[in-house]
Amino acid sequence: DMAEPFFRILDAGALPEAGNYETIDAMTVLTPHDGEFSRAFPDATGERTERALAAARACGGIVVLKGAETVIAAPDGQLAVNRHASPFLAKAGTGDVLAGMICGLLAQCDPSGGKAMFEMVCAAVWMHGEAGIRIGPGLTASDLEGALPAILRDLYG
Image (tube, rainbow, N blue to C red; front, side, top):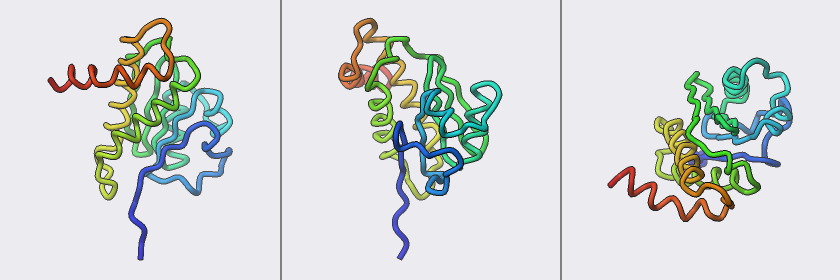
């Protein structure tokens, strides 16, 4: 009896050690910042986009390399760069909120197909950036949740 497929989000301490990728598959999203990325993927070289894509191919999961320009890379070569963000997101806890937002959107995907998975991850990253822009200076991680209803209303009417 096979277990049902499920999505996994790995962030911070849950990220793999260098080369230890056997628990990662196409249903996994990794959300490192640059320091965490360097520890998990020390052999990745080049520009951020090249490194993220190499890491996604090496581990088999989607890599969300967080930063002023967040890179989203999939093992099949899909690549997106989100420049729609705010410097005020560079605070403790905001990455945890992003991981939760990714979880919430992935919960709407069919885990057996995963076709919309990359798009949902990109949407979460964009909405996270939009929330940071709307909140502005003084942003705390707990403020992000409150910005989402208005963002969704503006997107979907």
